Amino acid sequence: EAEVAQSPRYKITEKSQAVAFWCDPISGHATLYWYRQILGQGPELLVQFQDESVVDDSQLPKDRFSAERLKGVDSTLKIQPAELGDSAMYLCASSSQGGTSGGTYNEQFFGPGTRLTVL
Amino acid sequence: AQSVTQPDIHITVSEGASLELRCNYSYGATPYLFWYVQSPGQGLQLLLKYFSGDTLVQGIKGFEAEFKRSQSSFNLRKPSVHWSDAAEYFCAAGGTSYGKLTFGQGTILTVHP
Image 1 (cartoon, rainbow over the protein chains, first blue to last red):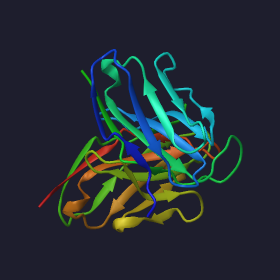
Image 2: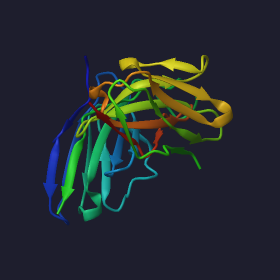
Image 3: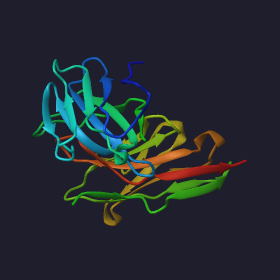
């Protein structure tokens, strides 16, 4: 069964350092999501891509976070510089269809996540 | 603002007992509704979803959920809990176009033998 791949699974870094996470969605899935899950809370959307375009990054702290999906396939989420409050699980998800208007909702499939600890 | 509330942070049940996890939503229109399960250190697995139609939906692992529009609720149930059901459960809601999910805070389920 196809799965969403993420790496690394665990990352420990010191504050002010740069970190990057990688996500490979299920083949053929046009929509890719990055969520952040703080311990004890539900996931919160950071950024959503439709192919290579960003369709929602309203909750992305753009002063330190960036995300790209250059060829509309895999994606990288970067934090620079990392802060203590960035410690969380970063989840990637993909779905086969999405858009900015109308359309049918399709199930989001989640990867195993990257657990980030900032010291 | 759109929101999903799970009133119970932690629930403990005995193996074989019935289970009900509560979920309430606040949305402009009836959203698409989901229940996910997350084992420690893992990603999220979809248990079931409601889009429209029959308000009682069946999912995997013997779970079911009932949509009640009048109560803005989508509670998850299982008639007999197994020790392997111990995990954290998230209720989520999505709009009709963007596909963004809004999650509740989660309910941790502990199962006693």
